[in-house]
Image (cartoon, rainbow, N blue to C red; front, side, top):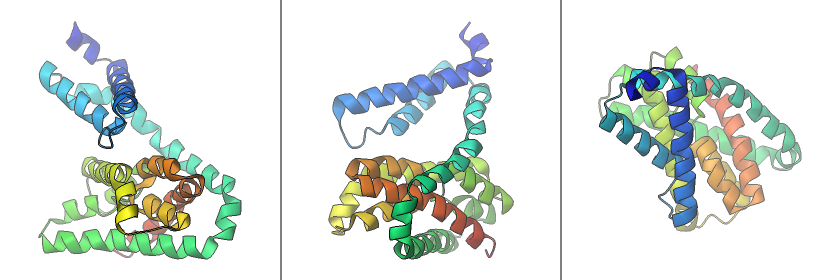
Length: 226
């Protein structure tokens, strides 16, 4: 019966929602920094599919419904920029320079590291846009011969790193300016990092939201020259 249900699109969609809700519950109960809801959800889904023997292709029928939302959600990010237009106008030059430097370091840093480790072209192009939000990263990767799945994994790893460790990095490098904190988190860790930036403060959250959009645009342009 379970395998019959797994063949329907609702299975993957329901499992994803339940796993994420469970992750949120664990985070609220433990308040432990490593208990990120998305990380827990991914672990739960992988474990469940492995134990039950349900193929990923069945899960993906419902998961693809969530993927369909990436494009519209990315477009909605423009609303964040509009809502934060006062903050953007006040800090326009730092935002522009910070996002430009952050995007360039992220893109070309990956290229240099992949070359050093002798990664093939497909892997390099897949990992290159890791610090962009998913829809933009997948589009950049596929247009350069990369793999959407690997690109998504890179985006997830970058986002989780920012969501979990960004407060530690802020203290470690003694970054006290809330504008710099928000820009750094948003430029490196996109939406997942922004959730943590919002916990640090209103300005940090606003600047991180702006950085997601601006860095996405800049990264798309820079990728044309790769």
